[in-house]
Length: 456
View 1 (cartoon, rainbow, N blue to C red):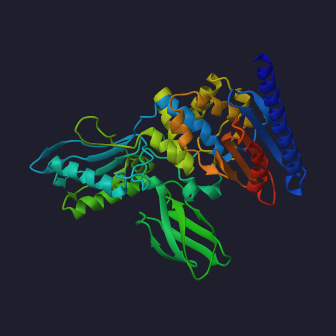
View 2: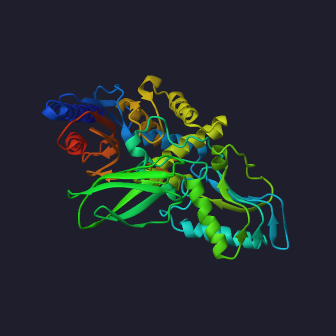
């Protein structure tokens, strides 16, 4: 029996050495190519018990792109709980008499990033608007003598992290997070060649500068919008003679929702004598409005649970969700919902789990900022920690399967990362992270796939 155990142990050591040797060979081949002349690599592989299998600059901090979401999603699941739900409410000031609301109607939220989303059954824009309309009617409101105010004050005014590149902000993946979000703060434009044909919904008060050109065979366009701005630009190139759908980020989602609710009420013969506005719109003009009253609440709308949100956050890499989550954790833990506090909360969370803070230099919650610097070893440590937690199933479910491996990917210019879990054909369980920066030319994804194939 003792001899058998020695043989098994020896075979495991030989197998581990074999995998390590194969990984080292593949890494050296990749890093010796002309495409990797000025590249940096951080790579770390462990077994399921955290024992090192292979590393190459494992502690080196590099730009992670969207594998940053691993840290945010795991911290949110533990900090907020997998059953956490965001809430959106309607309330009023003044009084209701004979069908007339002598006061203001308020819509407020604690930053629900799924409000008006299309991803979840029973949570689409029309579901929310219909439920809100029914609540207003049930309250006996037939006329509003005051204003309709969307109270977007739950988060601070800054909707996007300071480190995000300007040419990302106006595109759908660069949508910021507001105290009230709507339709994932995204709109779509159907464009034939370089001519606008239709929008997914009417954008409120946006003046467009169209500098599109036609040519090529793929979408090479960029949308530029800024939070609270009424000017938007699109440039670049789209194929001629075909309709292409291009997605952008809504400049003022709270105001967009306010306008849509006003139209909904008017279409149902509920008039509003005052103006349609938001808390921050008034602040921009130097005016003030009261925040939504806690009393006189007539409606409460809950988001999908956090485990469902994390699924889409990881599966489709929705940056809006990540920035909302770090602001939410900042609000819940320190009552200060801004990006700086959120990043500090995230870093302190992982420091408390034993990760060296020098290896987790976070700049946001989603990974879009090129100022994020994280090491492959730190990502593996986070993945190992998650694997031992009660919420792991919800976390793991969100990981896409790519190249036959369950892993999250990240992509920014000339950089790529993968991190996840893999069981080899020999039944060995691996946890890994690989981050490659400044790899120029060629297919960076395929180069990394070739390395990771050794874990299969």
